[in-house]
Length: 472
Image (cartoon, rainbow, N blue to C red; front, side, top):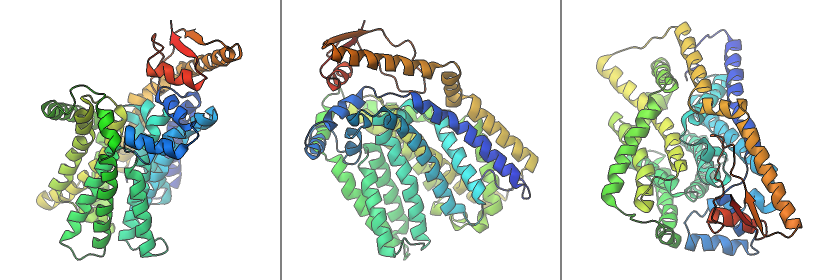
């Protein structure tokens, strides 16, 4: 989108941009080599070590939460097999999956108007834009329990969205029925990952069903079917018996006034933060230029994704409400930045849909044309790349690597593990560690406490055979 038409006769430029973007994303792959299982990882690993796996998963549904999909995966933590290499591979797979899912979606939408190299560039730039200012890279990619429960579902969603577009374009997977069945299975799978994705998907399919309700379109049956499936699968998550038990651990929850006020405040906070940066502003300008150039060559862009401007704006606001209000209502705190990571992921998509919708509307009203000189466009892209490199999460990841914070953290964690294994050999039942001296910002860190009975200490101690672990 933003790379299109920079220089029609210079494929080397597009390849150069691709190489630069690959270099920008490489540090995030490198950082994965230093992550270690921590906190909840060991609690779920203990569950995975139980003999009756299916009974354990069912107990989680009835006693803790309704996440029928992610519960399988978090309980099957790589540490069940004591495999740190696989644990460190997961962030790399998720980053790769994020890129491939973006690229697949853009290929589905723009394959007739954009060369493949530029589709790959788009996939990389959106992946980098997401990583660049997601509220917590650590919880988003570098912590197994959090990343599997949230980011994995977001990755699947983009493939699912691309599959829906293919269905609408009559590009069926073998047959129409099989394609719809496949989408239903993906939808059921996604909804079972977490409560936020469940609510977003129910909202998404309500909008699709509503938009097709008054139209005798071939997509109407699929829209209604998928909405019904989302309601049924969403009910399985929403009404799970474990939810009430989990919420009972939080004080003063279900406070409607506080939840509304804090939802409003946090929405303003994150909205202003997300749009007030160079990549977002310049990317938006380039996208407006793209829409005006190629509108007539793409039905989705021409029809504003079948949304009126006010509808797309309401949906943009709805993302904040769906992702922020439920945590406050259920727990009285925002607490987990991984839910806001999900909000940002969907915000990026909806922001550009909203931008397309309003561009089409305003151009009809005021007949304006945004022409950008190719040299200016190249300058914009250079500024976007520089910003992604040296500000926000790009800057913190650079510091963690350049100053060796991530590597030092890895060495400390490996030294701790050696001490634990040595204690097991000597049959010692207690280890007192020094506090971690290095806590890289991009890697999830949750150190022990001085109280051996706190769950963070207890879960890891039980994993290693009942050793009492604490810090001095």
